[in-house]
Length: 212
Image 1 (cartoon, rainbow, N blue to C red):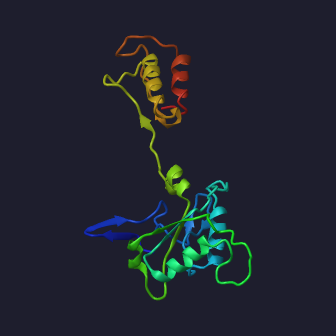
Image 2 (tube, helix red, strand yellow; image 1 turned 180 degrees about the vertical axis):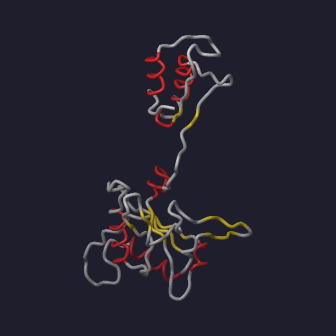
Image 3 (spheres, rainbow, N blue to C red; image 1 turned 180 degrees about the horizontal axis):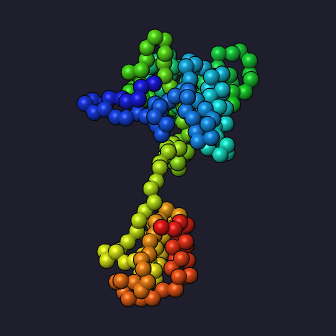
């Protein structure tokens, strides 16, 4: 629940885009909706099912479902939670029961034992982390990354409208046009002496989604 953590002699910021710690019950998106990714329940088959369902229902700022599919459980190096987790995900029947009801968690999760989590065991609390490894790779765990428009230029800082098309074309091979900022100067251009019609200059500027 802290906003920083220490590993050896290094301290790292553990806050997310809203200034709250990464795991918080009070994350608020741009639409004002509050979603929690921090829970206090001890691990059990029932809790695993409930948390998996909650994660699958997470939405983005526009209310669209994120499409999460939790597939990884990270646990501390503790014998009791090891027994509970491996029983929950390794048995095709419900663990701890004498009947043959199907355990739908079987085979759906990878388990990673991370001794670093042992630091947070205390007062009957044995933490575990549930995550979607594919979403982690594809979307950086949905980390909010605010981007500033890119001002693109060449070594001569050309402001001639037609020269800008070459600069923008080259940049567009690596970045979307919507991320670029552009400007053109007076006409005739003071560097090339070229006279560009206003319609052409305006079109070149608007082609990358915003005007100067």
